[in-house]
Length: 148
Image (cartoon, rainbow, N blue to C red; front, side, top):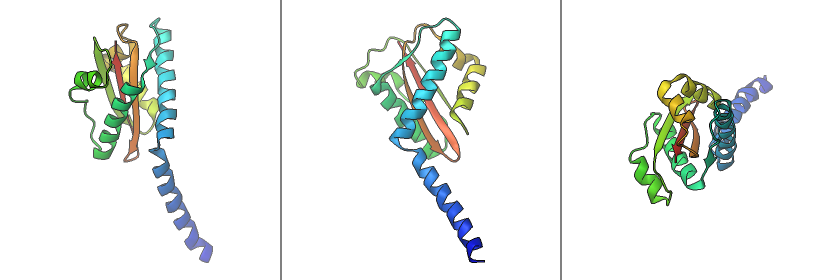
């Protein structure tokens, strides 16, 4: 009987710890690398130059993803051009994809099924990016900033 009471406590504690571990810088970095690899694979399949992430754009995207996850609301970055320029980035053209789903790869799949998001991902004028990933409410909240 005593073991039966411990199991639910262990499950709850494990779930709480797993949730806390998801929003670490290491988690964001690992997820960012997976997303960049997938997006560049898609671009290669369409004969489009690969994207290179920049730390400053990653910071802008990460802050935005964290804000969406905390508010549990999807929205675009306000004044994206100004935010990128304020970080010292040279920006002639820019775009942004945001989304959420239980897994990062699902968001990328949904972007590819949307005309506007797909256009951003395959736009030949974009050659740099920033990627943000945060979790909240059982979802991954992603921001993909593209610019050239």
